[in-house]
Image (tube, rainbow, N blue to C red; front, side, top):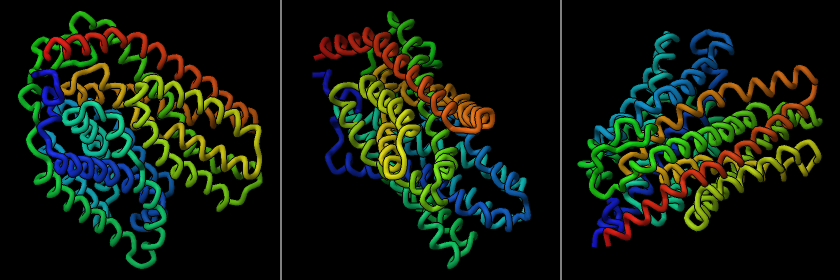
Length: 427
């Protein structure tokens, strides 16, 4: 019988091996994203002192990381089709380790900026494309659940507090060298813990441009979608644009929620809780969203999350005091799961052999939204001296994202029917 999970490289894996893979994917995502983003802000003043630079210059490191994540995502996706996941993730972890070592020890800031760029490239390879590729190649019926588990942002939640406590004791250099050691250890774990790709033979045959929607030489276990190329392209772009809006909304929240809290009369410490509560609620949101994606589908889950965010953006303008903390928790619950639902939805359009490259292109589509929505809200604030206009703007574009997800679902239905017919024919 060919139509079982083995055709996608899943059924041949023992329960222990699956648990190990999930743990490694969780570590890759949390260390690459959580450690890097979680330590940057708390170390920012010490970075200024170490290099003798301004605050603006010090923040350029994060800008380079973000640019590398979006700009090099297609390259990272292509690497997973040319090389095994074990090789790419091992090399990415080693490069992260070396980058942190240089950033810790050098006094030449331009060299440190180069390392930040390398970190961004490795973050997208190791923390975004890598775990998604492994889950799509090794799991079938529980992909949403697995994606929900590996994308739980535990490290992003706890790293700022740990760095703040450790900084007076170990200093900036000690903390960065400790992170360097973490990635060095991870490289060994990936090399010995990730087995050969079950679809490695098919990777080389996957489409050279998954966005174009054609696979001229289908790999064993993939499904023929040539007849649905147009729907594939439409579904990809609608999904990616909707995800870009939601992801940009996340950047807006992180950048503006503390100033919004201050505008509402909160102290700095209290307003900062709006960010912590957001991250904490995102943990539960990611797990529940993954569970729902397996049961009602990622598109309906995305639509529900987008509509939930629409309500919360309006709620922020209507409530005060404790109501703001409830709104912050709801925003985290609905928004943070985008990192789980995005790859789950991509997996309904492309075969497991093509998901890595498709994800890379999709992240590139997201990049403009990451850089435009936050300044747009700032411009609205400067123009009206209030966050009301900016939050209403986010309400409108998030509602647009919900309609984009609905349209993507309609475009992708024929593709999913083709998958089911293909699997049924193989049994």
